[in-house]
Image (cartoon, rainbow, N blue to C red; front, top):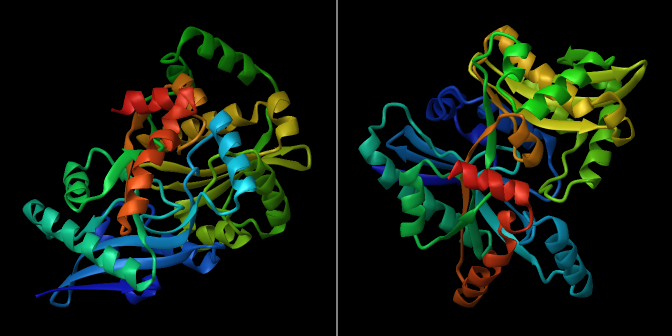
Length: 375
């Protein structure tokens, strides 16, 4: 017998059962528990679970929030929508119930390892029905799936069959790391990029420190984080200090904060998740006044690539931002999709029109190129 339940805490779901649905995931039960404990402002967490008898067979994280429909817009279009929001406060905001997570790279639905592939579509349908009921119970009309991987055709097909509209989302950047050395990696890049990186590497660089404990530098980390956040057009959430310390504490050796020092000054940090299969770049923040002088972004990038080489980690997952640089640095891209539906037919029809203008590839040529490469 199939039963479906939605919970407000991941602790209501047994850790091993959740992780069995996400085999080898770094963003696992412990990661979501750390996120939950961090109490990210303006987000409420939901956890969707499908049981067969007493056995967990499918799960998905979800959340509710107040959502601005121009969140993925940048550049000139962003300036226009911000003027619109100032003139009519709230005009671009809707309550949102979304399957996925604001602090995860993709919305991957977890299916228990013992479940045969032919049963996946039926379980996807159960999760979508559960999400719609839970959204209704929360009094929320707009339901969405955030960053569904386009390569999961079964999941996309079930979303469309449920009546959800779709549009491209921010693609994920990946760098396979089969290289024996940094020099071998540089040899795969374009001539001008290779020459530029080698020139920057010859200059004195910051001191690099890998940490699992950051309490003594947390004020400096949050200063760098807030400064970086202010420069971003595409930020969806504001992370509290407890997110950074909680991830390091909960994940132990599977997380690290990489610190970049110039003298005694902390000038950049990079939160990463790591295991033998991948390194995930979760957040990079830096002092803009010192970035060019010390090539902080490039230094961080090459430090991560070198770590993968030294530890024989085959994949560097490098996030959903900075597409122009990542195109130059040899990344490939995987396409993601947003699916959405409002239970009010009039609002749903309006969103169908709005999506033509708020697609992320409409306002950022580098992002458009990355989306094109990923399809």
